[in-house]
Length: 358
Image (cartoon, rainbow, N blue to C red; front, side, top):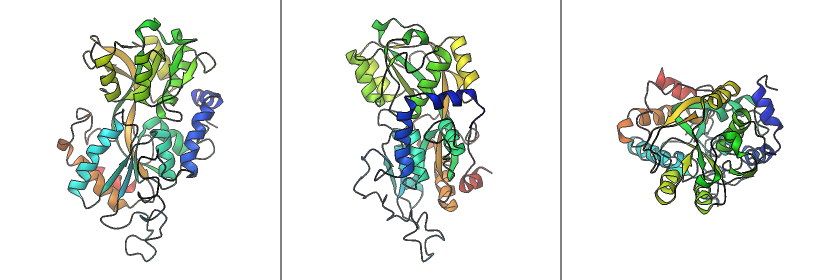
């Protein structure tokens, strides 16, 4: 068990058992592709081991002593997140750069994001994945969430940190909410079941708002559906975690009046005190239509992760392709740099990434 009080409280939350169940699906490998089915649940993406993830094509040693990554030209399976967030389009840009600079084709899959993605890396269904630094820490150390308690993802390794993932607390203007505690008794979408967004939302609601899952009506969907719920008046608030501007929030703001909660200094301090991975953050005025003043909030860090058994040569080549060609990216370019790529790294670095950054 962890000595961290917030982690112990998270473990006790009844509704996070649902999050745990979602994460365990990926960890146990019960899903055919470790994702949401969009990447070829019939096995076309190689999740059945045809790409060497189980060593079946590497037994002769011709493409790697452990067969874990295959030879040049093998498809790299990259698990991203929901299409309405930042992970998916940024992963698409990584795909273009990697395919342009190396011999590896890349298959980017839409998934439930962090918790699901670490499970997919753990069971070999993914080769690289986008995750949050806090979820990476929980998963690697086997604590903080029931999905990982006593069952650490021992092969989880870091590649690079990328940018702040900002906590957006979107509000229905008619809900009359000015503080997190005002959400008591209201309908709150905390993100996809088992996602990093849900984990962060429940952490913040408890530590900064004094609310447990017994105090509000929780709903769980992806960012796009959450935006639709706000537009239709089906929820009073929705948590979205992503690097601003988040596409789903941008689209919502062009069609519907929204508010984003300004967290007070006391709320932000409470969140930071209970979870060290949170940092103060600001959504600049004008980021979203109708939001004309800076919004104070907190953030975690987005990162790229991989699995220990994946070829160090391949990881080094992929890392070099991305960080030697940052000028080819258009998303989060103010944050993604070689110099900051290990800031907030919460897990052990993969050998291939360490070679590049040394």
